[in-house]
Amino acid sequence: MLRRSGGTVKTFHKPGWRFYSGKVRAFPFVVSKERAIQELSVNTAVSTAYKTVGTYLRRYFPSMNIDALRPTRVEPVYLPTWLIDARVQATLWLKKTPEQSEFNKDDVEVQFAHTCMPGFCYRPLSEYCLATTDLLEAKPVEWSEDMRNQDGDNVLCLPFTLSPFQLAESARHLSMADANVSDIIRFEPSSLREIMMAAYPVLIPIWLAQFVVQAPVNGRRQDVVLTSFIEAGRSEPRIYIELLPVVETLFNLLGLKDTPDLLVRGSPVEYPPRWTNVRSILGNHATLEHRKHIEDWIDLSLCKGVALAKYREQHFSGSKGTVDWEDVRIRPFTLEERAANLQWLGTAENLFVLEKMLEFYGQKHENKARQDGAALSDPNSIEVTQEQIQSIQDKIDTLKKEREEKKPGWLTQYEIQQRLLAETPRTEASQ
Image 1 (cartoon, rainbow, N blue to C red):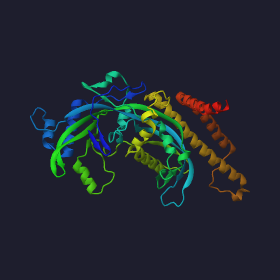
Image 2 (image 1 turned 90 degrees about the horizontal axis):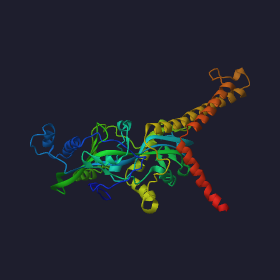
Image 3 (image 1 turned 90 degrees about the vertical axis):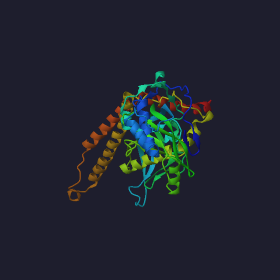
Image 4 (image 1 turned 180 degrees about the vertical axis):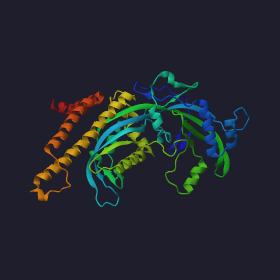
């Protein structure tokens, strides 16, 4: 079991028969049960300093009768996860540096790609992003019932208990104080508008193991049950090991805040994957530094602490509903689907650049026209002709047309649905 604040989250139980939509894709297990046991045993032994030598020797001399740490239970698990491509707009207040005296107001568009969100809420499992770059480069397969068995074991298939489609609404209800992203960026919650969101449901495999180790507890050496798990969808997996109670106590005595729930071992520990990935931020005063601050803020706000549990409670608990698999914004994670969605996002970025060029050239042309004569001209200024301005305008018009032509069919369908829903109350009121 995983012992964490707020109670005990039991993860070992009889596998339930979970329904998965045909839109769900699963990453295959590439780590065998035998390798998982070996890696988990060695790393848990090292991290707890329990039977370390024997466990190492057992790894290289498996036929020897050596007292080594072995799991009391091992289980394959599929963790539900959302991969997200999105486009949102909001009014932001930006500074280039904290020392700058005033914020600059800016209407900004933020695009997200390869962004992840847990499809479940079990701490601390749901606090760690397992969607590594090499995993996402693998080709997931459409879910089928025969995937419920792995190496002769029943796979624990956790259900999707939440989706990302209420995130914008939750953000709009934040207070102005909570909308302070950092000392150089804040946003107006009521201004947030979702332009596009494609959410891809995937299942990420792990091997979950339970160990019994001896460790000091309240001054006495006792048996302690720990949980470890290993990424099973990539050939160079990381291992996650539950901290011993004595380690947690030590952290508290040292006054260390935000201590981890799990110890992470293996590559790439130094560069763990992020939940949030901002593809681009488009605004007059927006910079790459602002992008990093947005990523950090979302990572901490959504997937750490109790924020995710509150989100699920607010939008998906009890009679509030479950995941609506008929929502057209839920897309299968295929190369063709993602390429089309990202290509459409790219048109917005290209259009922004051209419109800024048109604005710049237009101002230059107007300034040139106001000059009384050559004596007032700046020899280093850029010569701008009406033909150049018209050429940029033509490119903008062409790109706008291409943007409409390349708009994904599901997005057009969703926009029509939203317009019809918005018109329904007015129609009923007039009757």
